[in-house]
Image (cartoon, rainbow, N blue to C red; front, side, top):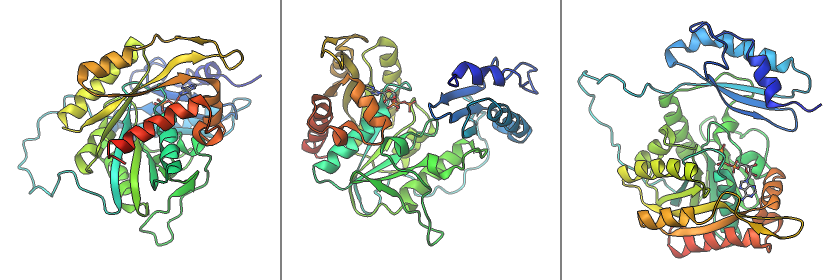
Amino acid sequence: MALTREDVLGALKGITDPVSGSDIVSTGMVRALAVEESGAVRFVLEIDPKRAEQMEPVRAEAEAKVKALAGVGAVSVVMTAHSTQNAPPDLKPKKKAEPTGPQKIAGIEHIIAVASGKGGVGKSTVSANLACALAAEGKRVGLLDADVYGPSQPRMLGVSGRPASPDGKTIMPLRNHGVTMMSLGLMVNEGQAVVWRGPMLIGALQQMLMQVQWGALDVLIVDLPPGTGDVGMTLAQKAHIDGVVVVSTPQDVALIDARKGIDMFNQLKTPILGMIENMSTHICSNCGHEEHIFGHGGVAREAEKIGAPLLGEIPLHLDIRTAADGGAPIVVAKPESPQAQSFREIARKLMEMGVT
Ligand SMILES: Nc1ncnc2c1ncn2[C@@H]1O[C@H](COP(=O)(O)OP(=O)(O)OP(=O)(O)O)[C@@H](O)[C@H]1O
């Protein structure tokens, strides 16, 4: 029988958090659990950064318990830590400030960030398809997968292997479907403990922007982690970005989260280029019947409210998922299909806007 999330959670329930005395599932420490058909299991242990060392045996035990389950392949357990929300004010005199404003990155003409308020709304699928669609239009395109919680671009673009660093200073990206790609996930050894503390994330992101040999690019698409975290904020503060594309499903709950993301970018004075409604209508892959599973038009209304364009509506269609899972996004796998066209139209709109 295939391995399920429940099997993994069951095994993790047998592990005790040394601080609270409860099991690590009940404490809510286990996040972003992904169980793939291949048996690969990934999850995050969200911990207090001060307890990283104390928690390492817990991480090791979690990895060992999951590995011992029948049907499990590669296991990757990453410890993450977020700075506490209300950190005490820093009263020490500040060091002289380094030049901090958003900088233009040599060789990269435009940067577009793809954000979503909530996970699983299709942000990575949209990023991959837009990247491939822009490449098909003749643009030199880079794709930076900055989603530390679930790096998915290597799978979506069908690339694997470790990026090389021939000189020990610069990093060679990977390339497929005309897109140059680098993923934070590729920098982490499978099964290795990585505590993505705020400063580390910032460092890793800067490394991705500055040390990866992107070559000359017309546009770099950055697939952000969901929500309003360190990565999006750092990107907007460090690099001059042309704007943000916000992906949401029509459901209210996803929209509420999207609004929070929009507020954050507004505060950072980063332009919102527009919104994309994903999983807009469901088109049956057998009979072509169309229905609105998650409602319809919610994103258009929200876009109007914030005065940003609705860049497009992407249907929920099986081919979009199978293409992404198969390592060739739908705009590459079936470029003439209506599903691919909906992505290609958005890519053309971005070109018309002069941001690619
Ligand atoms: N329009 C669509 N039609 C069918 N399947 C879709 C569509 N958009 C996304 N999916 C599927 O939904 C799943 C989640 O999509 P994706 O990984 O792109 O979301 P995400 O927002 O990037 O998630 P996360 O934030 O967790 O990385 C994937 O299996 C993807 O293939």
